[in-house]
Length: 464
Image (cartoon, rainbow, N blue to C red; front, side, top):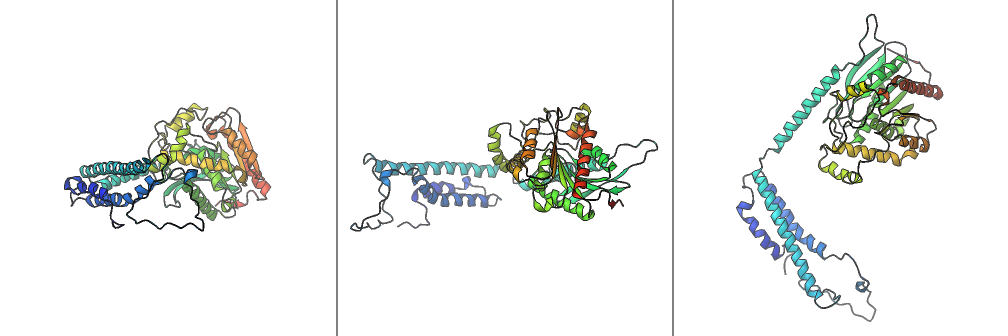
């Protein structure tokens, strides 16, 4: 009897050609051991799995159902292991001869194809230069240099407009690095009024492919109303670590937002905090505020043009996106529309955005696009669980995110404090529209109204 650990003779015959030296790399090469391990794994493990798979029944007919034997019937004894199992005749006795032959033929053909495929892999490994580690190290060095270049640009970015003769700065600004939950260095900016009482602190989470430095004009208007402002660049954006435009996981960005909020509260105790998010940043803020411990730390959230319902350009993209996200996460999707959709009615703002070296203008990366689809799908399914106070603002002519999704959020959310304002004919980047000062004032008015309603004394915190 053949041992259970010994492959069938047909596989032994197939393995004999692989013992020849020219099918494998030289014994002293780095890929020799990996090739031997691959051959052993496939040709010694696969024979015991494939016959079971090929002989499994796909359908079960009523004539082949098992019937328990009666008491007067004798149970037949088990046949020897070496004996062949008889196949039930369906039409004639020929089925008992054809089906086993067909199964053996499939096994031989499949194994032969697998053998040929492994031979090609072995030869390609032998011909390829053994320098994957050097190539990866070179790629990491290039990424690090790009990060340092972007960080230097972020440091040199003007955070305040130039002052005229005799004019004094009404706010102080600074930059810093914050280490996120995965120990990535995230570039942060802050604006605070020079004098007066601090009403509250607002944290800005920018949108996809941009950075927090673009909101300097909004920050100055906030400081003029005695609000402190922080802006944090995501991973892969602005002056933060990571490949430009690549987001490994938006869940990490959500966690970084919560961690940064805790840091801000430690530095400004007893000062009310708000979270602000634009576009995909709005989705990040909304998901972060869905955690109870985050909701308890803030007075409310402000969402401008939030990405709450984003659909792929074609249904096939939604099907293959998870697969490509795992296989080639950094691949740039060339079919993505980079600048085709206008985001502002102000031509000067469009030129400023797409000429900014810190704004990623290349095709969207596969993993990043899949993460956007994933977080928006999650939020759409959980509108009815939103209890945090929120103010959502959206332009009716927005072609990047769906204003109807913001309306659905307002209608379905059980939050006791919720407001919505739709701007007729406005586009995606509300704070870069010609009416940006009026929109910013709407946000300031909502925060002050929220502070007054919650009983917080406006102006209690002294600025130091």
